[in-house]
Length: 114
Image (cartoon, rainbow, N blue to C red; front, top):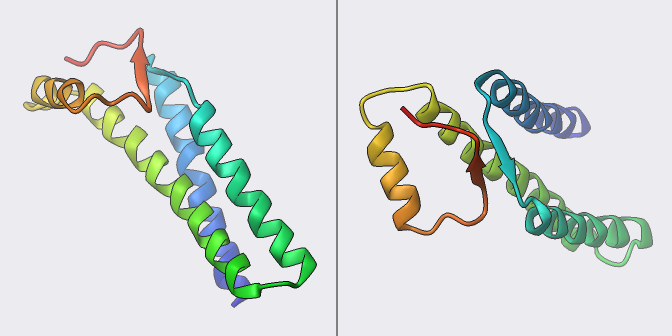
């Protein structure tokens, strides 16, 4: 089981690295990561506390997988913006949809979506 968890952490960690490289290459910048950092920090703190104290291994595992999910989902969100910035026939529709739903989590600065 340890080997599988390490493989999953490796993949989930590589996604944001790929995001950063692609964003740099395309000139995309995202800001206001404070809410995500706070949520990830609290989740990681809960996981570490319950893992190290031995109080509840079930809660420690649940928060561990929740942390992985938070990272994975946000990395996927950035990949969607990268795909839209790379072009394609629906980029304007994506930008309109993003504005319509009020996407305030990640706001693109200095980026033009063709």
